[in-house]
Amino acid sequence: MRAQRLYAIAVILALLVPAAWGAVPRRMPFTRYWPFIDYPMYSQSHFSGESAYAWQLRVAGCQPGGDPRIVSEAELHLPHRTMLKLLRQAANGPPHGKSRSLVTDMARQLPDPVCGIEIWAQRYVLGPGGIVDRNPPWQLHTGWALGQATAAR
Image (cartoon, rainbow, N blue to C red; front, top):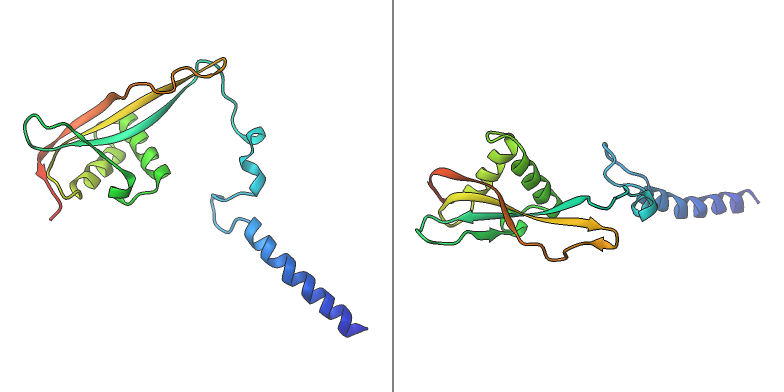
């Protein structure tokens, strides 16, 4: 009888511990939450007239008349959310801020010579029935020139 009870406890623990391990965050600050936190009823509310932005990094080569090219997260080896956060901070921060310095350093790691950096934005506006313009134009938000042509060595 005692052996059966111990066996039952061991089986129950073997099933419950992995489930609890996957559901409970293991690092601080809590970057992973219970599965139900991402449902719309727990998200922030939005109102008509509110704006959301999409950000894009473009670098200008050193050739005269060349158009700036888009730099993707994959080229910089960054997760999408990290790239968007960095671009938002660099675009809205001070001209000599930490985020802008990081963007400049990342652009210098690209294989082609870079003489200028531009951050472009798309502004999405919420209306009473959803997004007003589903394909707004990209607009130059901010840009800066590099002191000298730089390329990864």
